[in-house]
Image (cartoon, rainbow, N blue to C red; front, side):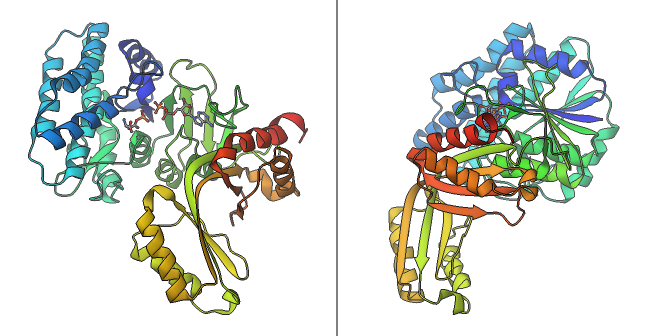
Length: 454
Ligand SMILES: Nc1ncnc2c1ncn2[C@@H]1O[C@H](COP(=O)(O)OP(=O)(O)O)[C@@H](O)[C@H]1O
Ligand SMILES: N[C@@H](CC(=O)OP(=O)(O)O)C(=O)O
Protein backbone atom coordinates (compact mmCIF):
# COMPACT_ATOMS: atom_id res chain seq x y z
CA UNK A 1 0.00 0.00 0.00
CA UNK A 2 1.33 3.44 -0.91
CA UNK A 3 0.61 6.92 0.37
CA UNK A 4 0.79 9.49 -2.41
CA UNK A 5 0.97 13.24 -1.82
CA UNK A 6 0.28 15.80 -4.52
CA UNK A 7 1.54 19.33 -3.96
CA UNK A 8 -0.21 22.56 -4.88
CA UNK A 9 1.49 22.71 -8.29
CA UNK A 10 0.04 19.26 -9.09
CA UNK A 11 -3.50 20.46 -8.35
CA UNK A 12 -3.44 23.98 -9.76
CA UNK A 13 -5.97 23.39 -12.57
CA UNK A 14 -8.41 20.89 -14.02
CA UNK A 15 -5.68 19.65 -16.35
CA UNK A 16 -3.50 18.91 -13.31
CA UNK A 17 -6.39 17.08 -11.57
CA UNK A 18 -6.64 14.85 -14.64
CA UNK A 19 -2.94 14.00 -14.43
CA UNK A 20 -3.39 13.14 -10.76
CA UNK A 21 -6.33 10.89 -11.63
CA UNK A 22 -4.26 8.92 -14.18
CA UNK A 23 -1.25 8.64 -11.90
CA UNK A 24 -3.35 7.29 -9.05
CA UNK A 25 -5.14 4.74 -11.22
CA UNK A 26 -1.97 3.54 -12.91
CA UNK A 27 -0.88 1.73 -9.72
CA UNK A 28 -3.39 -0.22 -7.64
CA UNK A 29 -1.16 0.16 -4.55
CA UNK A 30 -1.85 3.92 -4.49
CA UNK A 31 -4.43 3.91 -1.73
CA UNK A 32 -4.20 7.10 0.31
CA UNK A 33 -3.98 10.35 -1.62
CA UNK A 34 -2.94 13.45 0.31
CA UNK A 35 -3.66 16.78 -1.32
CA UNK A 36 -2.48 20.37 -0.97
CA UNK A 37 -4.57 23.34 -2.02
CA UNK A 38 -4.32 24.50 -5.66
CA UNK A 39 -1.00 26.26 -6.19
CA UNK A 40 0.25 28.66 -8.85
CA UNK A 41 -0.67 28.00 -12.51
CA UNK A 42 2.02 30.39 -13.67
CA UNK A 43 4.69 32.57 -12.10
CA UNK A 44 2.52 35.58 -11.32
CA UNK A 45 -0.43 33.51 -10.04
CA UNK A 46 -1.41 33.19 -6.37
CA UNK A 47 -1.67 30.01 -4.32
CA UNK A 48 -5.14 29.34 -2.89
CA UNK A 49 -3.61 29.30 0.61
CA UNK A 50 -2.30 32.83 0.08
CA UNK A 51 -5.70 33.97 -1.21
CA UNK A 52 -7.33 32.50 1.89
CA UNK A 53 -4.85 34.35 4.10
CA UNK A 54 -5.79 37.61 2.32
CA UNK A 55 -9.48 36.85 2.91
CA UNK A 56 -8.87 36.15 6.60
CA UNK A 57 -6.71 39.26 7.06
CA UNK A 58 -9.43 41.42 5.52
CA UNK A 59 -12.11 39.90 7.74
CA UNK A 60 -9.96 40.34 10.85
CA UNK A 61 -9.50 44.02 10.02
CA UNK A 62 -13.02 44.99 8.86
CA UNK A 63 -15.21 42.23 10.26
CA UNK A 64 -16.85 41.74 6.89
CA UNK A 65 -16.21 39.59 3.85
CA UNK A 66 -14.43 41.14 0.89
CA UNK A 67 -16.57 39.76 -1.94
CA UNK A 68 -13.83 40.28 -4.54
CA UNK A 69 -11.31 38.26 -2.53
CA UNK A 70 -13.88 35.57 -1.79
CA UNK A 71 -14.65 35.23 -5.50
CA UNK A 72 -10.97 34.78 -6.26
CA UNK A 73 -10.83 31.69 -4.04
CA UNK A 74 -14.18 30.24 -5.08
CA UNK A 75 -13.27 31.04 -8.70
CA UNK A 76 -10.21 28.80 -8.49
CA UNK A 77 -12.34 25.82 -7.42
CA UNK A 78 -15.06 26.76 -9.91
CA UNK A 79 -12.71 26.83 -12.88
CA UNK A 80 -11.28 23.43 -11.91
CA UNK A 81 -14.80 21.95 -11.63
CA UNK A 82 -15.78 23.42 -15.01
CA UNK A 83 -12.63 22.07 -16.67
CA UNK A 84 -13.38 18.64 -15.22
CA UNK A 85 -17.06 18.78 -16.17
CA UNK A 86 -18.28 18.19 -12.63
CA UNK A 87 -21.75 19.73 -12.68
CA UNK A 88 -22.88 19.08 -9.14
CA UNK A 89 -23.60 21.51 -6.34
CA UNK A 90 -20.05 21.07 -5.07
CA UNK A 91 -19.09 24.66 -5.85
CA UNK A 92 -21.96 26.12 -3.83
CA UNK A 93 -20.93 23.79 -1.00
CA UNK A 94 -17.33 25.05 -1.23
CA UNK A 95 -18.49 28.68 -1.24
CA UNK A 96 -20.68 28.03 1.83
CA UNK A 97 -17.80 26.27 3.57
CA UNK A 98 -15.39 29.17 3.02
CA UNK A 99 -17.99 31.74 4.11
CA UNK A 100 -18.62 29.69 7.26
CA UNK A 101 -14.89 29.60 8.03
CA UNK A 102 -14.59 33.36 7.50
CA UNK A 103 -17.62 34.37 9.55
CA UNK A 104 -17.34 32.07 12.54
CA UNK A 105 -16.74 33.60 15.94
CA UNK A 106 -13.16 34.71 16.59
CA UNK A 107 -11.66 33.90 19.96
CA UNK A 108 -8.04 33.87 18.80
CA UNK A 109 -6.75 35.46 15.59
CA UNK A 110 -4.11 32.81 14.94
CA UNK A 111 -6.55 29.94 15.31
CA UNK A 112 -9.04 31.78 13.14
CA UNK A 113 -6.36 32.07 10.47
CA UNK A 114 -5.61 28.33 10.67
CA UNK A 115 -9.24 27.42 10.21
CA UNK A 116 -9.53 29.60 7.12
CA UNK A 117 -6.22 28.37 5.65
CA UNK A 118 -7.23 24.73 6.09
CA UNK A 119 -10.22 25.38 3.82
CA UNK A 120 -7.89 25.15 0.81
CA UNK A 121 -6.82 21.56 1.40
CA UNK A 122 -10.18 20.45 2.81
CA UNK A 123 -12.16 21.57 -0.24
CA UNK A 124 -9.52 20.28 -2.66
CA UNK A 125 -9.88 16.82 -1.12
CA UNK A 126 -13.66 16.98 -1.52
CA UNK A 127 -13.32 18.12 -5.12
CA UNK A 128 -10.81 15.41 -6.04
CA UNK A 129 -12.95 12.68 -4.46
CA UNK A 130 -15.97 14.04 -6.38
CA UNK A 131 -13.95 13.90 -9.61
CA UNK A 132 -13.03 10.24 -9.07
CA UNK A 133 -16.69 9.48 -8.32
CA UNK A 134 -17.81 11.31 -11.46
CA UNK A 135 -15.60 8.90 -13.41
CA UNK A 136 -17.21 5.91 -11.67
CA UNK A 137 -14.25 5.22 -9.32
CA UNK A 138 -14.78 4.57 -5.65
CA UNK A 139 -13.08 7.36 -3.71
CA UNK A 140 -13.85 8.87 -0.32
CA UNK A 141 -13.00 12.22 1.22
CA UNK A 142 -11.54 11.57 4.67
CA UNK A 143 -12.11 14.05 7.46
CA UNK A 144 -8.94 14.34 9.60
CA UNK A 145 -11.00 14.75 12.79
CA UNK A 146 -12.97 11.55 12.18
CA UNK A 147 -9.78 9.76 11.18
CA UNK A 148 -8.11 10.93 14.42
CA UNK A 149 -5.27 13.19 13.22
CA UNK A 150 -4.65 15.05 16.47
CA UNK A 151 -2.04 17.76 16.84
CA UNK A 152 -0.64 20.13 19.45
CA UNK A 153 -2.33 23.43 20.19
CA UNK A 154 0.23 25.55 18.26
CA UNK A 155 -1.41 27.63 15.50
CA UNK A 156 0.56 27.64 12.27
CA UNK A 157 3.13 25.26 13.69
CA UNK A 158 1.22 22.25 15.01
CA UNK A 159 2.99 18.98 15.78
CA UNK A 160 1.40 15.57 15.48
CA UNK A 161 0.36 13.82 18.71
CA UNK A 162 1.61 10.24 19.11
CA UNK A 163 -1.88 8.76 19.49
CA UNK A 164 -2.73 9.83 15.92
CA UNK A 165 -0.66 7.03 14.44
CA UNK A 166 -2.80 4.34 16.05
CA UNK A 167 -6.01 6.12 15.09
CA UNK A 168 -4.97 6.56 11.46
CA UNK A 169 -3.86 2.93 11.09
CA UNK A 170 -7.46 1.83 10.62
CA UNK A 171 -7.69 3.75 7.34
CA UNK A 172 -6.11 0.67 5.76
CA UNK A 173 -9.34 -1.24 6.25
CA UNK A 174 -11.51 1.20 4.32
CA UNK A 175 -12.52 0.41 0.76
CA UNK A 176 -11.71 2.50 -2.30
CA UNK A 177 -9.27 5.36 -2.75
CA UNK A 178 -9.03 7.66 0.24
CA UNK A 179 -8.51 11.37 -0.36
CA UNK A 180 -7.05 13.03 2.71
CA UNK A 181 -6.57 16.81 3.01
CA UNK A 182 -3.00 17.74 3.92
CA UNK A 183 -1.65 20.58 6.05
CA UNK A 184 -3.92 20.45 9.12
CA UNK A 185 -5.15 18.37 12.03
CA UNK A 186 -7.31 18.90 15.08
CA UNK A 187 -6.52 19.72 18.69
CA UNK A 188 -7.98 17.45 21.33
CA UNK A 189 -10.69 20.06 21.86
CA UNK A 190 -11.67 19.84 18.19
CA UNK A 191 -10.10 23.02 16.82
CA UNK A 192 -8.37 23.11 13.43
CA UNK A 193 -4.62 23.75 13.53
CA UNK A 194 -2.25 23.81 10.58
CA UNK A 195 1.32 22.66 10.27
CA UNK A 196 3.82 25.26 9.12
CA UNK A 197 3.67 26.39 5.47
CA UNK A 198 4.07 23.60 2.90
CA UNK A 199 3.02 21.17 5.61
CA UNK A 200 1.00 18.77 3.44
CA UNK A 201 4.30 16.90 3.04
CA UNK A 202 4.11 16.24 6.79
CA UNK A 203 0.56 14.84 6.57
CA UNK A 204 1.70 12.38 3.89
CA UNK A 205 4.59 11.18 5.99
CA UNK A 206 2.40 10.74 9.10
CA UNK A 207 -0.09 8.64 7.12
CA UNK A 208 2.69 6.55 5.56
CA UNK A 209 3.99 5.77 9.04
CA UNK A 210 0.51 5.06 10.43
CA UNK A 211 -0.47 2.50 7.80
CA UNK A 212 3.08 1.08 7.43
CA UNK A 213 3.03 1.97 3.76
CA UNK A 214 5.52 0.29 1.46
CA UNK A 215 6.33 3.71 -0.04
CA UNK A 216 5.56 7.40 0.43
CA UNK A 217 5.38 9.04 -2.99
CA UNK A 218 5.59 12.80 -3.09
CA UNK A 219 4.53 14.25 -6.45
CA UNK A 220 5.65 17.76 -7.30
CA UNK A 221 6.70 19.82 -10.34
CA UNK A 222 10.34 18.81 -10.82
CA UNK A 223 11.86 15.62 -12.25
CA UNK A 224 14.10 15.09 -9.25
CA UNK A 225 15.73 16.62 -6.24
CA UNK A 226 18.64 18.49 -7.79
CA UNK A 227 22.07 18.87 -6.27
CA UNK A 228 21.39 22.58 -5.92
CA UNK A 229 18.26 24.74 -6.07
CA UNK A 230 17.35 24.96 -9.80
CA UNK A 231 16.40 28.60 -9.32
CA UNK A 232 19.98 29.46 -8.36
CA UNK A 233 21.85 27.25 -10.85
CA UNK A 234 20.45 26.34 -14.26
CA UNK A 235 20.05 22.62 -15.09
CA UNK A 236 21.77 21.26 -12.03
CA UNK A 237 22.67 17.59 -11.64
CA UNK A 238 19.78 15.32 -10.62
CA UNK A 239 20.10 13.18 -7.51
CA UNK A 240 18.81 9.61 -7.85
CA UNK A 241 19.21 8.52 -4.24
CA UNK A 242 19.64 10.34 -0.95
CA UNK A 243 19.70 9.20 2.66
CA UNK A 244 17.18 10.54 5.16
CA UNK A 245 20.01 12.34 6.94
CA UNK A 246 21.20 14.05 3.78
CA UNK A 247 17.70 15.15 2.83
CA UNK A 248 16.99 16.36 6.36
CA UNK A 249 20.04 18.62 6.26
CA UNK A 250 19.30 19.85 2.74
CA UNK A 251 15.61 20.56 3.33
CA UNK A 252 16.51 22.42 6.52
CA UNK A 253 18.78 24.70 4.55
CA UNK A 254 16.57 25.52 1.59
CA UNK A 255 15.66 22.45 -0.50
CA UNK A 256 12.00 23.40 -0.26
CA UNK A 257 10.98 20.48 -2.47
CA UNK A 258 10.28 18.56 0.75
CA UNK A 259 9.32 20.12 4.11
CA UNK A 260 12.08 19.57 6.63
CA UNK A 261 9.68 18.14 9.21
CA UNK A 262 8.28 15.64 6.72
CA UNK A 263 11.03 13.06 6.92
CA UNK A 264 10.82 12.08 10.56
CA UNK A 265 7.61 9.99 10.52
CA UNK A 266 8.65 8.11 7.36
CA UNK A 267 12.20 7.65 8.67
CA UNK A 268 10.99 6.25 12.01
CA UNK A 269 8.96 3.60 10.20
CA UNK A 270 11.73 2.93 7.65
CA UNK A 271 9.50 3.94 4.73
CA UNK A 272 11.31 5.14 1.60
CA UNK A 273 10.19 8.47 0.17
CA UNK A 274 10.03 8.87 -3.58
CA UNK A 275 9.95 12.39 -5.08
CA UNK A 276 8.33 12.35 -8.53
CA UNK A 277 7.03 14.76 -11.14
CA UNK A 278 3.28 14.94 -11.82
CA UNK A 279 4.07 16.49 -15.20
CA UNK A 280 6.50 13.72 -16.12
CA UNK A 281 5.59 10.66 -14.06
CA UNK A 282 7.82 8.30 -16.03
CA UNK A 283 10.97 10.18 -14.93
CA UNK A 284 12.85 8.14 -12.31
CA UNK A 285 12.63 10.84 -9.61
CA UNK A 286 14.63 10.76 -6.39
CA UNK A 287 14.47 8.11 -3.66
CA UNK A 288 15.15 8.92 -0.04
CA UNK A 289 16.32 5.84 1.82
CA UNK A 290 18.15 4.73 4.93
CA UNK A 291 21.42 3.83 3.24
CA UNK A 292 22.83 4.36 -0.20
CA UNK A 293 25.93 3.35 -2.07
CA UNK A 294 28.25 6.27 -2.42
CA UNK A 295 28.93 6.58 -6.12
CA UNK A 296 29.47 10.31 -6.31
CA UNK A 297 32.17 12.34 -4.59
CA UNK A 298 31.95 13.63 -1.03
CA UNK A 299 29.09 16.05 -1.68
CA UNK A 300 25.55 15.18 -2.83
CA UNK A 301 23.92 18.59 -2.49
CA UNK A 302 24.43 22.25 -1.70
CA UNK A 303 21.59 24.17 -0.06
CA UNK A 304 21.35 27.72 1.12
CA UNK A 305 18.93 29.95 2.97
CA UNK A 306 18.80 33.62 3.86
CA UNK A 307 17.44 35.35 6.98
CA UNK A 308 19.85 34.46 9.77
CA UNK A 309 21.72 36.56 12.29
CA UNK A 310 24.55 35.79 14.66
CA UNK A 311 25.21 36.89 18.21
CA UNK A 312 28.95 36.78 18.74
CA UNK A 313 30.13 36.84 22.36
CA UNK A 314 33.74 36.82 23.48
CA UNK A 315 35.24 36.76 26.96
CA UNK A 316 38.77 35.95 28.00
CA UNK A 317 38.93 32.50 29.67
CA UNK A 318 35.38 31.64 28.64
CA UNK A 319 36.48 28.00 28.42
CA UNK A 320 37.20 27.92 32.18
CA UNK A 321 33.94 29.55 33.25
CA UNK A 322 31.46 27.01 34.51
CA UNK A 323 27.97 27.47 33.05
CA UNK A 324 28.78 30.28 30.59
CA UNK A 325 27.03 28.63 27.63
CA UNK A 326 24.05 27.69 29.77
CA UNK A 327 23.62 31.23 31.07
CA UNK A 328 23.87 32.65 27.56
CA UNK A 329 21.25 30.27 26.24
CA UNK A 330 19.08 31.01 29.28
CA UNK A 331 19.03 34.69 28.30
CA UNK A 332 17.81 33.69 24.83
CA UNK A 333 15.21 31.38 26.31
CA UNK A 334 13.93 34.25 28.45
CA UNK A 335 13.23 36.06 25.18
CA UNK A 336 11.49 32.95 23.86
CA UNK A 337 14.18 32.45 21.20
CA UNK A 338 15.34 29.08 19.96
CA UNK A 339 18.77 28.92 18.38
CA UNK A 340 19.90 27.15 15.22
CA UNK A 341 23.66 26.64 15.66
CA UNK A 342 26.41 27.60 18.05
CA UNK A 343 29.95 27.36 16.71
CA UNK A 344 32.48 28.14 19.43
CA UNK A 345 36.17 28.79 20.13
CA UNK A 346 38.18 28.95 23.36
CA UNK A 347 37.15 32.45 24.32
CA UNK A 348 34.19 33.03 22.02
CA UNK A 349 30.89 31.61 20.94
CA UNK A 350 28.44 32.56 18.18
CA UNK A 351 24.76 31.81 18.39
CA UNK A 352 22.93 31.68 15.07
CA UNK A 353 19.24 32.52 15.05
CA UNK A 354 16.51 33.34 12.56
CA UNK A 355 16.58 37.09 12.36
CA UNK A 356 12.85 37.62 11.88
CA UNK A 357 12.46 36.52 15.51
CA UNK A 358 14.59 39.38 16.86
CA UNK A 359 13.42 42.98 16.55
CA UNK A 360 15.73 45.96 17.22
CA UNK A 361 14.52 46.47 20.77
CA UNK A 362 15.02 42.83 21.63
CA UNK A 363 18.49 42.96 20.10
CA UNK A 364 19.42 45.83 22.39
CA UNK A 365 17.96 44.13 25.45
CA UNK A 366 19.91 40.92 24.71
CA UNK A 367 23.13 42.84 24.22
CA UNK A 368 22.68 44.63 27.57
CA UNK A 369 21.96 41.46 29.48
CA UNK A 370 24.93 39.60 27.98
CA UNK A 371 27.25 42.50 28.88
CA UNK A 372 25.98 42.99 32.40
CA UNK A 373 25.10 39.46 33.53
CA UNK A 374 27.91 37.56 31.76
CA UNK A 375 30.48 40.35 31.87
CA UNK A 376 31.38 39.68 28.24
CA UNK A 377 34.30 41.54 26.64
CA UNK A 378 32.53 41.88 23.32
CA UNK A 379 29.02 41.31 21.99
CA UNK A 380 28.38 41.73 18.28
CA UNK A 381 25.10 41.09 16.51
CA UNK A 382 25.32 40.66 12.78
CA UNK A 383 22.27 40.48 10.55
CA UNK A 384 21.57 39.46 6.93
CA UNK A 385 23.51 36.24 6.91
CA UNK A 386 22.89 33.29 4.63
CA UNK A 387 23.72 29.74 5.63
CA UNK A 388 25.14 27.44 2.99
CA UNK A 389 25.04 23.75 3.74
CA UNK A 390 27.26 21.29 1.92
CA UNK A 391 25.91 17.80 2.46
CA UNK A 392 27.02 14.26 1.66
CA UNK A 393 27.49 10.92 3.46
CA UNK A 394 30.71 10.64 1.42
CA UNK A 395 32.27 13.48 3.42
CA UNK A 396 33.02 11.09 6.25
CA UNK A 397 35.41 9.09 4.06
CA UNK A 398 36.96 11.96 2.11
CA UNK A 399 39.81 14.13 3.23
CA UNK A 400 40.02 17.73 2.12
CA UNK A 401 36.36 18.66 1.57
CA UNK A 402 36.65 21.70 3.85
CA UNK A 403 39.76 22.85 2.02
CA UNK A 404 38.04 22.50 -1.35
CA UNK A 405 35.00 24.43 -0.16
CA UNK A 406 37.09 27.22 1.39
CA UNK A 407 39.16 27.45 -1.78
CA UNK A 408 36.01 27.74 -3.91
CA UNK A 409 34.68 30.54 -1.70
CA UNK A 410 38.02 32.36 -1.75
CA UNK A 411 38.13 31.95 -5.52
CA UNK A 412 34.89 33.91 -5.96
CA UNK A 413 35.87 36.50 -3.35
CA UNK A 414 33.35 35.50 -0.70
CA UNK A 415 34.35 36.01 2.91
CA UNK A 416 33.41 33.17 5.27
CA UNK A 417 31.74 34.69 8.33
CA UNK A 418 31.50 31.38 10.14
CA UNK A 419 32.07 27.64 9.67
CA UNK A 420 30.31 24.83 11.49
CA UNK A 421 30.77 21.14 10.91
CA UNK A 422 27.90 19.01 12.23
CA UNK A 423 28.90 16.18 14.57
CA UNK A 424 27.20 13.71 12.20
CA UNK A 425 29.92 14.54 9.65
CA UNK A 426 27.45 14.53 6.78
CA UNK A 427 27.28 18.29 6.56
CA UNK A 428 29.35 21.40 6.72
CA UNK A 429 27.87 24.83 7.10
CA UNK A 430 29.22 28.18 6.01
CA UNK A 431 27.79 31.52 7.05
CA UNK A 432 28.22 34.26 4.43
CA UNK A 433 26.67 37.67 3.86
CA UNK A 434 23.33 37.42 2.07
CA UNK A 435 24.61 39.49 -0.84
CA UNK A 436 27.29 36.86 -1.46
CA UNK A 437 24.98 33.86 -1.30
CA UNK A 438 24.37 33.19 -5.01
CA UNK A 439 28.00 33.76 -5.97
CA UNK A 440 29.12 31.37 -3.23
CA UNK A 441 26.65 28.66 -4.24
CA UNK A 442 27.69 28.88 -7.90
CA UNK A 443 31.33 28.57 -7.01
CA UNK A 444 30.77 25.61 -4.68
CA UNK A 445 28.63 23.89 -7.31
CA UNK A 446 31.40 24.42 -9.85
CA UNK A 447 33.95 22.93 -7.44
CA UNK A 448 32.03 19.81 -6.43
CA UNK A 449 29.91 19.03 -9.49
CA UNK A 450 31.36 20.57 -12.62
CA UNK A 451 35.01 21.32 -13.01
CA UNK A 452 36.91 18.83 -10.88
CA UNK A 453 36.63 15.07 -11.27
CA UNK A 454 35.89 13.55 -7.85
N1 LIG B 1 17.29 21.13 -4.78
C1 LIG B 1 16.07 21.21 -5.28
N2 LIG B 1 15.61 20.26 -6.14
C2 LIG B 1 14.38 20.35 -6.67
N3 LIG B 1 13.52 21.37 -6.41
C3 LIG B 1 13.93 22.33 -5.56
C4 LIG B 1 15.20 22.29 -4.95
N4 LIG B 1 15.32 23.37 -4.13
C5 LIG B 1 14.18 24.07 -4.23
N5 LIG B 1 13.32 23.44 -5.09
C6 LIG B 1 11.99 23.96 -5.45
O1 LIG B 1 11.00 23.13 -4.91
C7 LIG B 1 9.85 23.25 -5.79
C8 LIG B 1 8.87 22.12 -5.48
O2 LIG B 1 8.37 22.26 -4.17
P1 LIG B 1 6.97 22.99 -3.87
O3 LIG B 1 6.95 24.33 -4.52
O4 LIG B 1 6.70 22.92 -2.41
O5 LIG B 1 6.01 22.05 -4.71
P2 LIG B 1 4.56 21.49 -4.47
O6 LIG B 1 3.65 22.50 -5.10
O7 LIG B 1 4.57 20.21 -5.23
O8 LIG B 1 4.36 21.29 -2.99
C9 LIG B 1 10.48 23.20 -7.16
O9 LIG B 1 9.64 23.76 -8.13
C10 LIG B 1 11.78 23.97 -6.96
O10 LIG B 1 11.64 25.31 -7.36
N1 LIG C 1 -1.18 24.85 0.86
C1 LIG C 1 -0.28 24.92 1.98
C2 LIG C 1 0.32 23.57 2.32
C3 LIG C 1 1.19 22.90 1.28
O1 LIG C 1 1.79 21.87 1.55
O2 LIG C 1 1.25 23.47 0.08
P1 LIG C 1 2.27 23.05 -1.15
O3 LIG C 1 2.16 21.56 -1.35
O4 LIG C 1 1.78 23.83 -2.31
O5 LIG C 1 3.71 23.43 -0.73
C4 LIG C 1 0.77 26.00 1.76
O6 LIG C 1 0.75 26.66 0.73
O7 LIG C 1 1.58 26.22 2.63
